[in-house]
Image (tube, rainbow, N blue to C red):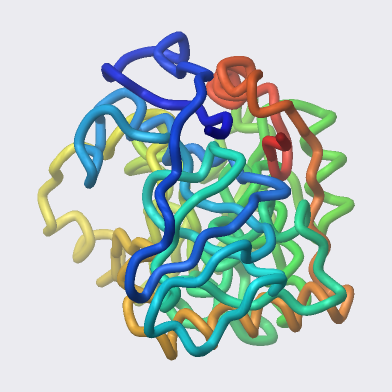
Length: 325
């Protein structure tokens, strides 16, 4: 038996239950890992609340990302052996001392990436990777707007877009978060609680506006985000921290300048094994080079997952949050 955090019924953070569970031996094509750290992400709250249905039903072990060492290998697995350092993002099972994983959803960790770094960056870092390299391929001279610039994905986006030669504008809710975003690559900071962010974007860019807006906030930043984008630019909505964006008249994209709008998700970008490996490699390379640092700013014991969710939802966190056994 090992410790895990399970959800028996959907609801608030109080439904996260710390308990002992039995993790089976790996079946064909599976590996079992002992986790050294598990990542906490906003999407975990969506599954906990029932906003997103759990793919495994109830009860489920919360969490998706983590890093650790292989302790058992099922039949038919050739790419991994006991003792390998690995990391993964796979729905459910993350908040546990041990977990089973499909081997084709796991990547090996380079020696220069720690378990805690990996747990803090697999979901957020690979999300940032597809956003700046594939959803909209950021290049030198571009101007990008990053909402929640001091958040987990935000800090990575700011650094990566900066490293690619873009001018980065970040929105934040406090002076401390503004300072943090600036330290991680944002050139301009907008305090959304006291400033009109579309007006500030127009001012900062001299009326040229942004090539792309990366929005993990949702309801409260839409549709004003569209007023920050140049004609033929991109609106990339990748999260709903303030609630889902309601259905809207698609003609608004035409009136705002023939804009593109997308709601991507990591699962589609890494559905193929080769895309998963390539995305992870790009992330490991940019972190290994020092161009992107992974700030793990909150660390909780596994048994304190309730507190981790409370802090995340009250916007009291910055950067990455992890759980350790």
